[in-house]
Structures are given as structure tokens and as C-alpha cells.
Length: 550
Image 1 (cartoon, rainbow, N blue to C red):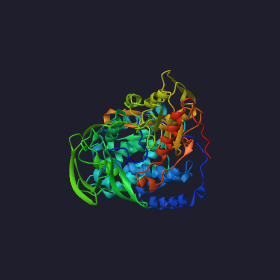
Image 2 (cartoon, one colour):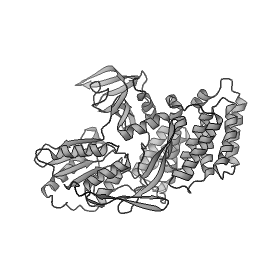
Image 3 (tube, rainbow, N blue to C red):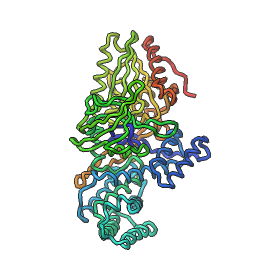
Image 4 (tube, one colour):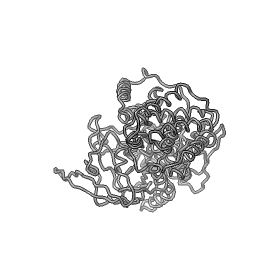
């Protein structure tokens, strides 16, 4: 969204990384009392259909427990699925063009072939029958959703016809038809489309539900991209997007969300000069934002270039709080992925915040390093901050890693039992000592970089164990519906051939920023990294030895 802070789940970009490692799941009884309590709350919320709140609790458990119970993983994925479906129904701007029955059926068959025969990393893991059955289930969820029914049913649609369609889906779930080839699935979908047509539901609407269901049968990183989401992915990869140029965050009071806060204002964006960090947004186009539903906030903030959004804002000025309104025009915004900050002291310490990996990141990194090396004291040690970096464009991560590695394996990728090594070979690689900051939101391509620097003994890592995700996705586009898929196409391993999924990268030194520290704007992790970098700057010939993590 405007931009990264409130996205539901992991933002999945083309060429993201991760590994699907099958590990024995922990039991719920093995969780700490606090996590067991959260699990009980999540179950109840899920039972009541409060998908966003349940997902948030499942997400917290997954972050705290790298090998969570299977029910946590299933609950997380199911709630995410329902959230994405609700968002799809509420985002009318992302509706796909109308298709004929024949075109919709042909496109469905092509999607199944792409998923099952062409792109997906584990093509033998899930059968065509499973892909079809998940579509049946997704369509069933749609017929229980009031927004979907309101938008797609004819006003004179008969209740009996709706019940007949639901009964047809129930029959497909109970008496599962034999789906041995894509033509079998196509024939079954044709019957569903004919029943849906009696209610006024267009073939394109049925197609989207069955495509989304097929993706859900694979993994949480394979998914359907609506026209709006496809545009967002393209923007993420290029470093450009249409918006007002702000990052938003949700400030909590205890466990409850309290305020929607401006975390950052991008200098090149429309909001620059109008909003400042710390502003509290109380209304968006006259509506109070639902802090329990970040996807809804995202939908309200995004729009076409030239469209406007009105924000009602509270700004603290001394002891006073001043309310005001701001009307901003959405336009293309260039989002930097690298921020450099020289340390104003005699040690020659440089600090770089790497926010994400996009196509422009390698050039941005080169410019940042040049800036730091040109400071009066030169560059004697570097702190690279990967905290909160959700990943991004894999080739960019490889290029950045090679800037710091003269030689060595950066990562291994695996597909269809074939392994490929990605190696560094750069005689001009930067040789100054490095400290890398990581946390539980360091993920995907950022874990590739952190793991490469750690395993090649190139840097010392400080912070918390990283997220633990890694599968390479590619984009598959379908021009007829101006939409696409993100499909997991490969797995990766660290230079030590260890998986990242469910494990992450463990830092050399564990340092945690407590909620109290974050509230006071102090940063113990960064302070520790800078202190270590200063020590390294005094002894550039060799990196200090760190004790192994306990």
C-alpha cells in the first residue's frame, strides 16, 4: 500500500525466495502458555468468521514459533484465503473483463496446465483433482458472501436456482469426479458455469474463483493477482507505484490497535510537504479506517493516477493536537529501496538501510556505497540494516551480495531435484568489515543476502532470527483478463545447504528491541551494531570472533 507497512501477509513479488521444507509439526501443547492462549483466541475468531483478527493471531504465533503446530499453519492459510477473497469482492476496480463461456473455459484449462505441468516447483505434489476441488470450495465460499451475491446475481434470480448451484457444488465435493486431464476439469467447470448463468453470474466471475482455488491448493505464496495487484507487483519491482507517497503503520495501545500513523513521507510523493511522520489519520474520504482490516485501508488509499483522496489528520504541535484536512492527488511515485547515512565521527562508519529488493536496488546500492566511501574519513566499517526487508527481486539480491563477496556460494536453488549454485566472483568487492542487522521481518531475498554474508564469514549478524521464507516465484500474465498468477517455481538453500523455511537465519548475537524501547524511539539493536562496527574499524585486518548463539 502506501506502501509496505500494512500489506496483508507477506508481499509476494516476482522472483521472491523461499523453501518448502517438510518438518514434523510441533503440537499445540508444546507452545508457551501465551501462545496457547493466542491459539485459542484465533480458533474462536476463525469460528466466528473474523478472518483478519484470527489471521493476525496465527501470524503472531508463526513469527514466535518457527515450527508451529499444523493447525496454526492451516488456520493461517485458511484465514488469509478468506481475507484475500473478501478483498477481491470489495475491490470493484479490479474486476476482470467479461468473457464468453468458451474463452473462460479455455483460460481455465491454460491456468491448470501452467500450474500443474509447466511452472509449479512440486508438480507431482498436488493432482489436477485437488486443483479443481479447491476451486469448488472457493466458489462455495463466494456463494455465502453477501457482497459477491449483490454484485453478481441478477435482481430476479430465483432462490431455487441459487440452492441448485450450491447443491451442485456440494455434490462435486462429496462425489469427486475423476479429473485425470485438464479437459476433465474443463467439462466439470462448464456445468458449474451453466448453473451459475441461470443466476446471472458471468463466466469470468466463476473463472476467477476456480483459479484462486487452484492456487490455494499449492502453497501460500502461489496466488492469483487481480488487475490492481498485478499493477502493484509491477510497481514493487520497478520501484514505482501510483499513490500519495506515504508509509503507514498501526500504533497499538496494549494489544489493541489504536491509531493509523504516518511512518514515512517519500520526498518525491504528493504528500511531501503536506504530511509529516507521526501524523494520525482519523478519516479516509470521510470514513474512519478499520484498523483490524489493513486490506480495506490499502484499498481506500490506492487508486488511479489523477484521482484524489481526502485525509483527515491529527498533528501534535507541542502540547496541542491540531486537526486538519489534506486532499492529495495520486500519481506515480518513485520509491527508493536504499537509504545511506554516514556516521558523523572519526571512525568512518557507514550505515545503509536496505528496504527491499527491486530492479533499481543494485544501482542504488552502488550510489550509496560511493557516497559513504567519499565521506571525509572514508569508509572503514559498514552497518547494513535488513530489518523489515520482506525481500523482492532475486537477481537484485544476487547482485548486491556480490558487491560484498569476492567469491563463494550465495545460494543454491532446487527444482525437480536439480540443483543450481549461484556464486559470487568479484575481485572488486567491498572489503571493509560489516555488521548486518536482521529481525523477524527480514524475509525471502533479504534472508538470501544475510545467509550468504554469514555463511561466507563476511559479516557479523545482530538482532533476531529472520522470518524463514524462501521460494522463487515467477509472474504468469493473462492478457484476456488483465490479471496474472504468482507461481512458486523453485526452492533455495543457504551456502551451507540449509533450508530457510521454518528456520530463518540465526544472528551471531541476539538483541531484541522491546516495545518500550520502540515506543521511546530508542534502537538497542542499531546501537549494538554501531558499537561493534566501531570496534571492527579499529581492527580492519580481521573480523572479531563472536561466540556461537546459545
